[in-house]
Image 1 (spheres, one colour):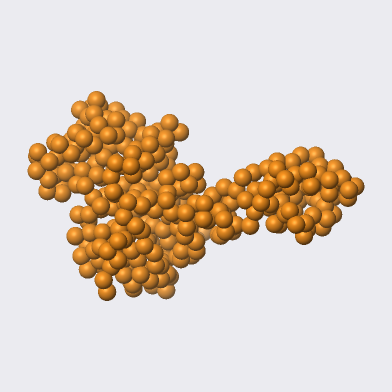
Image 2: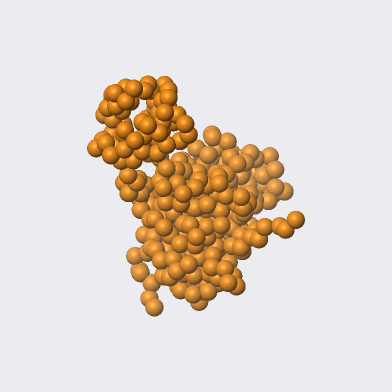
Amino acid sequence: MEPDSAAAIETRELTKRFGSFTAVDKVSFAVERGEVFGLLGPNGAGKTTLVRMLTTLLPPTEGHGYVAGIDVARHPQAVRKQIGVIPQALTSDLDLTGWENIDIYGEFFGLSRRERRIRGQRLLEMVGLKERQHDLVATYSGGMRRRLEIARGLIHSPEVLFLDEPTIGLDPQSRRAVWDLLEQLRKESEITISLTTHYMDEAESLCDRIAIVDGGKIIALDTPVGLKSVVPGSDRIDLAVEHDAGKIAAVLEGQPYLRGVTRDGQSRLSLATDDGSHAIPLVLDAVEAAGDRVTSITVHKLSLEDVFIHFTGRTLRDEGAKKVSLFVGAGMPQQPMRR
């Protein structure tokens, strides 16, 4: 079976089972070369297992996976030469300088001293660490270490870069610096980026397309705009009434300017609509005509988190399982401790 020559990443019914447990269930998708592709899903959804198969750390049970046109099961060593992997955990060596971290990594990939010097200096400049390259990494902030590790992962000029939660634990300024770096990579190279993240704003800002994974399957895959278009109502109106939300819900149900009405407790309602600014005066009039009064009302634009909840029925924070790195303990089904 030949891979799609236009795809940087491709899976065809890729499956991984651990005994009777199916972690990834016949997943098929393709990522174009130069695309930034996001994976979203609650813990235990199968994202990490999927990425571990694509990065050759786990063999598939069934199906096929291709990275840079190479079969991950048949030619794992060849795949590893074409990928860079930035795990969630910070893995740069604290006892080495920034330059030494990059130089030794380049040596692992068989680069000559000249190649390491030329590429390493260019990458250090790109990530804004050229002036600190001879300082011990122990003196770096978390954001500096993350930028160093992205540079390190690019030293061998991979075709595909896998990032697992690249900004988790970073302060807002450092997060923005990493975002800017990834945007720069997108503009200046043809590298393909696979991004696993729990930050909705990160996925929406960086990704060309996003796959929502749950129960080992891809349950939605589209651009951020395309995913939002599937959810009824682009705006959400949250309101509180003085007396009886149940009565007001019955009044508003079926109104042509609303897509849906959800009651939230005794006095609160959530309304889905395509145009919040147009719907608000109509809602206020309907509540007043029903003999009640609105005590508060706000309009929210549909967010990617709303889309996620629409497809999975839960937020990322609902999951109790601990998120783990691509390299450490990931991909195995976790059993709760018995007390």
